[in-house]
Picture 1 (cartoon, helix red, strand yellow):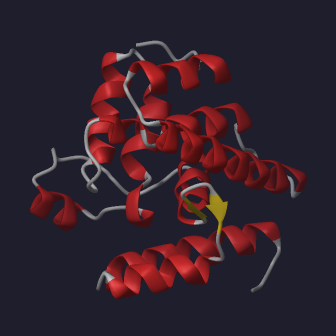
Picture 2: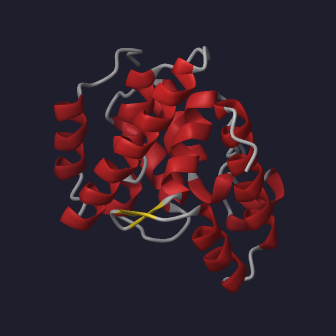
Length: 176
């Protein structure tokens, strides 16, 4: 498995070759723009962030939606990425981006393979966070995402998204 990242164009081509819909591809591009903006803002604050990894991980985060539109798209996407020979760093972003992360017990209930599904690296957190701020192709305030998750009665996901928001805002120096 290569640690070499695909180019932006190769990532978008892989989405198409995997049969992602135009809607999913547009969403992935919007998440990538937001994630890259966040990564660059954090770099300006002096943090070490791999912007290329953030962009490629964000472009490919929903590749599993080519086959599945449930939360399981994270596991499916990781399998697609692994079979495409993508670096482990990209595979981790894909499998850890949903719901601000999925705990071990939640993953077990979903029947997922034993693994870590909570974003750990800054790059994983940035992509997961950007995904929560993009609905379809539009940016939304984090409160909109939290309200949606609350309607779906997912209090643990609400808490994780709120914590992720607070962590990113603190890193940016914004106390809101």
